[in-house]
Image 1 (cartoon, rainbow, N blue to C red):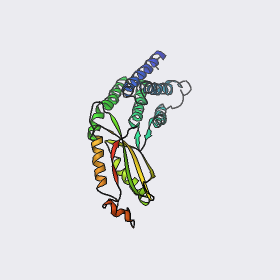
Image 2: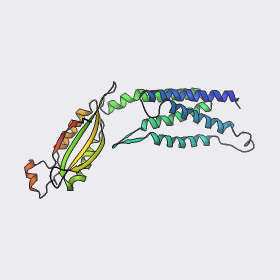
Image 3: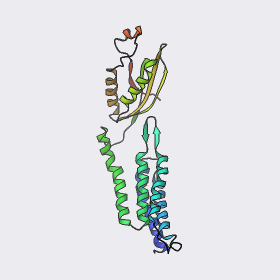
Image 4: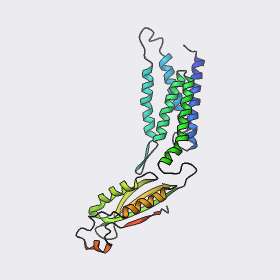
Length: 253
């Protein structure tokens, strides 16, 4: 059984590894940064130390499985992960931060058991994944891989019959919910005339997302829903376009 000073060294190592993981999150201004990851790793190490050495006198004559505590740590981190996953409009943020917290707990467990080399490799792997795989993922999503990007909000509107509102909203979500831009909100208001509805969408685009948004709107304009104005003489005055679509414009707000 290690001495209490050796256990304190395990705890210090866990805190250090967790802080190293949290530095990258703090630098990117995420919700769970330096302190959170250090506390998660340190807490995991404390629970592992407690499960291994805290009850040895009470369970000396029975078989004791300390790995069960590690399994409970994994479940407990799920609650913290759920707290950093946020829904932003129709997009979800925080999944990567939640996964990083989960990895910090694993690194803390390794440090708590004295597996410092594996904990160090785990720390390097987590930080490397967050730093190096980010540009690759953005490039695969056809976004710029590096450099600072300025997000621009766009306001998009489509006018349709009230009976077609649900169909138009579904088409907007399907056409605009793509990599390169984020659909933040979608709402409906009374249209310019009786029986018409204006469906509005707020989107955020970064880098080439603005160009991709223009392409998506162009494709959407070329395929209007055929049911617009069924039996409505106003549809003849729209030159066959059943759902007038306005070009997305930068939102002044």
